[in-house]
Length: 306
Image (cartoon, rainbow, N blue to C red; front, side, top):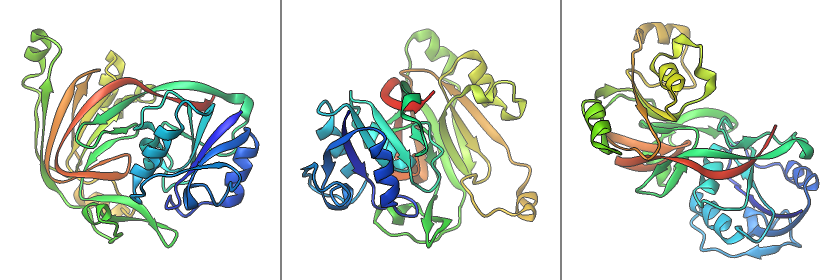
């Protein structure tokens, strides 16, 4: 099997060279890779694809575009954000996204201990951010912080500063936010959802793809209902910041009760998020203030254990 390999050198706690080589040895031969720390240092005998480095997720996206159609599988080492960067190229070639990031909880991630014979091609829906042409699979989030790794610890950092290349520890803060529908498929659907607007002071606003994991779990509230009736995605506006790693019991009791408001989203529907904070996709800050998000069906093909 001919492989293209891309490595995100900034993912999570750092990339383990032995892990990279162990994964590749199970699959085939590396024929294409990125320059320097994007893959060349691990596979010096492969053909190196040159790009104009931005030292951001755009490097991964550009490399996937260059590899698409020239190999059997594109193997990407990184976290949820790196997987999203790869899928944002919308390649026809299947991706294999190996989790070496901070959280590695996204739908596209495959653990490195997979068995090759168990891998099957799976298609995934996505959440498309029009302004930056970024596709998310875990979540689109409005909030002032993201989670990242510093000195081996997962902590909150300022999302705005992260876009400038800095990791500055920061506490989550509430913000004013509003979510409205932009386009509807028909006059009837327009009539049904014209009143469905979320507006207020929130801790986070999420857009998530629904999952069967929510079925039968009444505690998931509106998300469970959206899943049950067949909506592919849902918007959640939450009264307190939920992207947190350092809550203690006494902290949680102090801010409870936490309330969540939800609205369902269907394929092809677009919503506009307006918020005086940063909007991130799969853990990567993208834009400040406003974003247009569309739910798209089967946007990427990924190898996953079945």
